[in-house]
Length: 321
Image (cartoon, rainbow, N blue to C red):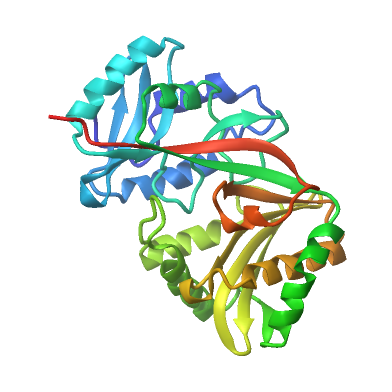
């Protein structure tokens, strides 16, 4: 177990190349990995573990929790992995959560099922057995996610029409985010904190970290970020972050509303308005990326979507003494 260097360990990079270089989406420069690593280095007590059967990064969270990420196995031997995992847990007592790679702003979660279509920006590839191994370790909680797409938007626009009409009378509008205005980013930082600070694995970003994340949007792939303020008259009550890829795919990344405006059908109005914009832009398909299965957005009727990937994250209670 070592304190990590500024660059990811060479043998870790070699392992990932061996495991994933044959995929067309593999980035030999590991651009996203290096960005995750820079966040990881800023976390308390960050430690790199490189064992006989697996490697991972660990860092301390609140309430004596440990986050684990950058996980890769070196063999298919579950019993050997389980024994080594148990030894590492004893060395870092307390509850564990993961996978987390320095920040929930960056890729995390293990893919548990896929129809094998190419990964989109924001996903993190892993070996197929990782989810099964985590389940066999008997976590205290598993949180499930999914990604889906649709190619026709009339259904969701029709479903959302009444909500959009109602909120339009209250002054609802989507205002484009001015990405070249520093004060806009400062306001977004405060809003993200207000909306997500209680979420699983969330850790406050300092201004420099947030600026680094903001500047990274679009750097590792083509396309253009779409950012909107959700407003009621002149008050900003939320935001929407999407990404339009060069191939005509529009990825719905995040729609966030301040707590006092949640569960009031504003999200339905936002969804309707954004799909109208997708249609106007000629988007060939919309991807709903890494949505938690219990999220309210999944309560909308969705007979016209195709789920193409599922994921999970895991929590492990502290070991009994």
